[in-house]
Length: 220
Ligand code: B16
Ligand code: MG
Image (cartoon, rainbow, N blue to C red):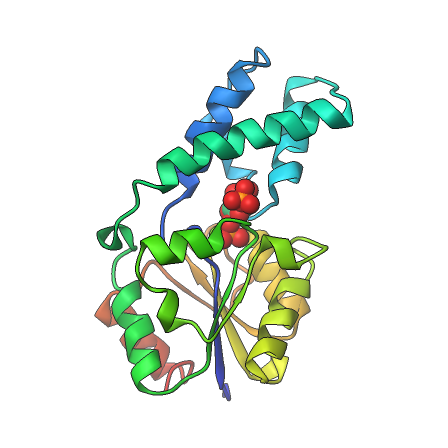
């Protein structure tokens, strides 16, 4: 039986599909290096930091860049990414998630956002859901990226709740690993094929899947 007191959410892939924007921005940036990034390659960039994403692309392309050029490329990618991000509207939240967050707020449950993205605050503000979070831990507040548990441990600390009493909602395998390393309950959002290590996997936050979370004692 779970004794859940705190709720921690990943952003990209759980609350909004910004992976598409990351892909378009990285593909254009990679083309400048003469490399064609595929959607399949893009799967490897989910949940990892901006600089680590570039390192993965450079390894795939077999290209070496000095630190200054690496920095310049990540800046270019981010400028392109933000052009897409700024088109986000409240209706772009993934199915059911805004209602679920609102119901947690109404029930006075502590809720945190834990995203590797340094743009996380801008994204939740554009989606008009920022007031639904009691704490936000973003990419600028962590030293290690998932699967390291740092981001989730910081989120639990910010909520003032023991790690073992928190549940994490994650769409990436390395995020599930990070949640388990933090000794938290992990709910995978997506397909069980990629999220096998999770305690439970749901495809989305539609009412029937929220019901399943209640049945399993993850949501009270
Ligand atoms: P930024 P999440 C992650 O968000 C994305 O999944 C990942 O693809 C991206 O590289 C990372 O944020 C950093 O994003 O360039 O905006 O700082 O899944 O942890 O919410
Ligand atoms: Mg994610």
